[in-house]
Image (tube, rainbow, N blue to C red):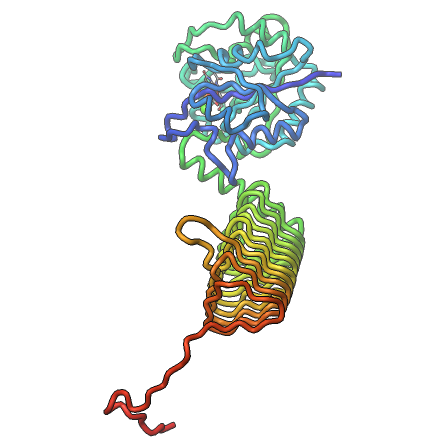
Length: 460
Ligand code: UD1
Ligand code: CA
């Protein structure tokens, strides 16, 4: 068996991002760019690659945790030097080492798998992932010999005019035979225009030793783009969003206006769901089958069951059962759990509450820290008064209760099963099952109280 691992280079500063955050932690499709690289490696069975960290390394390590093992590069002396830092963490049993940059979030697992395959088939000492670009400026150029084999890579800053005209470039992704790589790295020097230890210099050394260097040309040039600026970050975002939208449309999701739908990379959407414009599905969100989501809806870290309707609403860290209707203009805050067939209507806010099957909160309510049974109706304008200025208290409403409009439920309070609360009441004591509770001042009507304001005769 050929043992493989990978080294991910992520120690650079990313000066052009103008950020306090390390470059590789900037997000595309809702997750750090380096995380996309790790996902692509995981798709070819490389788990826990060696991540070379430097600038903001503590933050990178805190963010990625066990997904990688870490090698520190305190001073960024070049890509060759960076790979040397990974050496102590790579077992002698490893035969092949892939090297990838942490700032290329568009690289796919399929491309990396094709690179491994090409490397193994050709029995090369190194295989470089290359691309043919119309504008190769800034990249290292691939120098081929008269046989068409890779002879060397020359950096833009060290290249002659003839070399600069070469359009085939080094993507910065490679496979290397481990033993050959580390012994060649011992020989490289920083004698070049940038005074850096170039990883690319090992290729010429391989050739001197009689080794064969292969090139694998990529089909889709977009994949190799490295992110150096916020503009490139936005461009990568657009590419990834397109990929994600296509993936879900292929899986049976309708998007009325795909360009206005934003998806996190790990979102899942069931078939026959229709997504209306201006919808954002963030974090670990799972949408069931046959739902209608949007327009203008944001769902983050939530589950929506099958056949749900969520329109013009915000749903955060909540669980929504099957056949529920949410919105327009509802706000489900963290800890909300709606069972099946629940209706949460317009201008309703629910926080950290469980709403039982078939219950309805149709209009203008605040329900917080509450447990609501099945078949409950909560009238318009009902408020759970859950906060006394110091502590939060809970409200329990048992099955089949009916809460009249404009009720204040002063928590802690329990409304028994089937109880009826009269409209406009402020309920500060528990109401037993089946009881009627009304709290209303006696209505006084004093006729003729204001002279000159006698009722006019109705004209309609
Ligand atoms: C490198 C290649 C170039 C290739 C290009 C593709 C070399 C010498 N050149 O150039 O042929 O076309 O990538 O994008 O390798 N890094 C470290 N430590 C360092 C230096 C860099 O971790 O000391 C990391 C960076 O964070 C980055 C990656 O290595 O993720 C590439 O470094 P960068 O400086 O962008 O290399 P280029 O000069 O662009
Ligand atoms: Ca670069």
